Amino acid sequence: MENGGFEMIEVFGTDKKHAMKKLQDVQDGCWIKITSPTQTEIEDISNRFHIPKHYFHDALDEEERSRIELKRGDTDRSHSLVIVDCPYETIDEMGYTMYETIPIGIILVEKVFITISLREVPVLTSIIQKPLDTYDTSLHTRFLLQILYAVSYFYLNYLNKLIRLMNKLEGKIKQSMKNEQLYAFMAIQKSLVFFATALQSNKAILDKMQDVEHFMQNEANHDLLRDVVIENKQAIAMTDTYTQIISGMSDIFSSVISNNLNMVMKFLTSFTIILSLPTIVGSIYGMNVSLPFAHEAHAFSGIMIFTIILTLIVTVIFWRKKYF
Image (cartoon, rainbow, N blue to C red; front, side):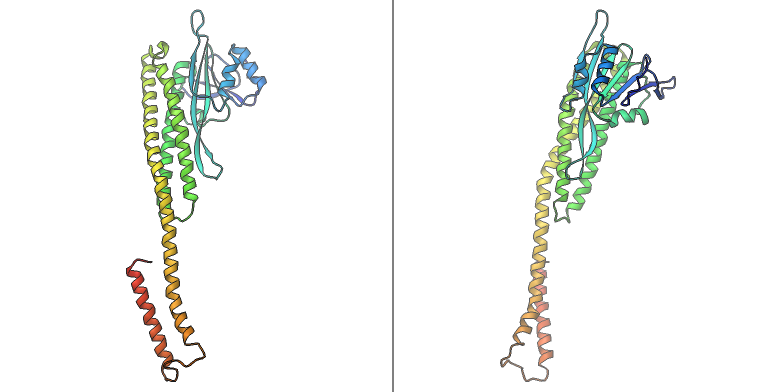
């Protein structure tokens, strides 16, 4: 069967060396990667492989949660659907880096493996460009588990990036008097909330897979599924830990910024008082009235020395009181 020339439908297959190759035609055992399809494209693929249309619409719904639907024919399952939440990097409304999740639908039919998503997903792109494993698109169940493993890997990778970003912001915020760093922390918090929700949804489908016979009957698939479950649990634990940490750090850093601003205001106030002392003395001796030492030959030098000494005394007092 031919691709049909659809712009957002790509066909891939693996050769004997397990290298991922882009194909011109749909073949048995291939992977059909569908991104943001039109209604016409959905109807065509649905009719070709006898797939319910709601599978596609569910996968293209940004609010859809992870789930699994297994269907069986008289002798074998005719098609199965797995929807899993995948992470991707984006920019929030304030211009700061954050991470959100998007569902991808994975449809298993007898002869082809289909993925469908609303936009390009880094997880699928990495499988094509930088594989984490040796893939075989004709082994549908194993390829599904490998995609799920890549999803968990990306969660852990993005969590590590969030941790490094958080540590970097922590160093900056110690000297900060602006809100930019707090906005960046808000982006991290939102990312962790998205991750926590998505990872729990993914956990539900992984738990269900462990109870399904055809995921467990092959020992290699069983071991791979166990690895996916472990990676997902690790991501959940990391997300929970850093959600608790950053929720407390946001309040602390808000206080740090306020305290930094108070320290600057204290310094400026103290400096202003010190600078005002020579002005006060100068203003007094600038008045057109009789003043002490007005007719002394060294009156100017004496006044300057007195002003310097007074300024130094007040400066030392302020310094000892840590006003600056």
